[in-house]
Length: 478
Image 1 (tube, rainbow, N blue to C red):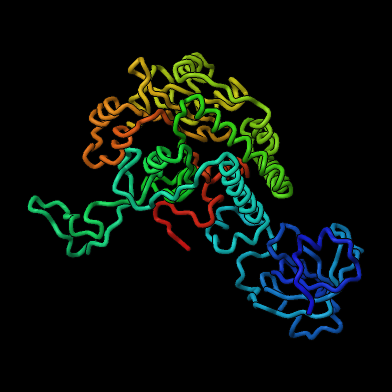
Image 2 (cartoon, rainbow, N blue to C red):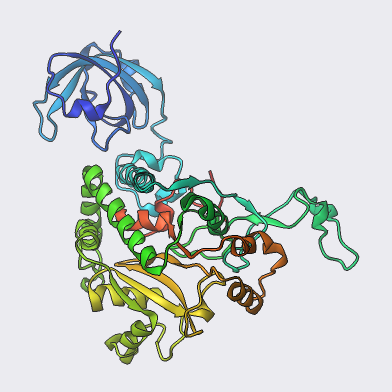
């Protein structure tokens, strides 16, 4: 019995005249003689040469685009251009038919919008083969990075009764009957009769629970799904996405910045080293796409150049206050070219401002620190000026904010004061405050939206194209 070979291995093989077996899906079938077969192990296809004069016509008719087949034959040196090896078929078995008239992915170029509607099939295209291979590599690199540094991987809850961000845009989790919702005397929903006995939601962050673990293990990280019920249909928002959130005890903002920069360089380098074919393909795809844009809208860097740009440069570090001064006196601001003009300290920076700092002013990745307390979360450590917090955002070319983090407020009195100012219920957060009561220590952490990282490394422009089954307003297909 011949063992099945992966097409990826056969394309590099020189073991000619050996008997091989391959299984895969038909990409094209030309002249009743040449099958381009792909099994997902790589983007490349192997050419199967069919002896059509000795193959039953009924079988030939069933070799259609999308059909799954098994082929046994001889590996031979290819006589054609574009490939080094062929498989000269001796037997072909149809494993799964594909109706040629109905199969959506015909051998032609399809728009990304069209493929989003066919998300259950788009993995079979070269673009999405490359995207999800890179996604896999980045996920593996994240785990490897933290494992090498002795971090403990924590699974934080998906269902939570707290709102880490104070955003209020959360998905409710309930078993209550909507038609017979129990009410209290004052007409409010009586969550005491719900499954958990209180109002619960899908998590927006594992950070708060991660802090609890960091106070015991010293350094932990989470890598799991998070949810935002934000009614946004932009190319940068998803309702369900994945987050990486390390938390480190005995660390300050400086340590936090160092960890984040090291992590970003590590995972980008890993992808460049281990996904050469995929990134080269995505680089060429992006260059082709750029040709259709007006000159002024084209990127100054190719995808590979952009990735190396982040590896070759030390990340520039400056305070929010310094950034505001730069932006205030910048040409785009003075000529009113920014959509959101910067005129005073305290403004929340937009993507256009972040990209200006990275791409035009410093020409390197940027870490902004010490933001106004009024635009940041309650758990961030108050600076001595009582106006700013020890926060940090890491900004990347083409995308703006990639990472957001901070030194956490470890002082109980300062933390409770901030919670009161921001109407965060202390009674419900007793467990979080306990970490400040019993052996509190300086600690810091950050959050990296995984899809945003994949977006950057693949050069894709819509976040719905870097997650297998995107969830967004009015859409929960597949």
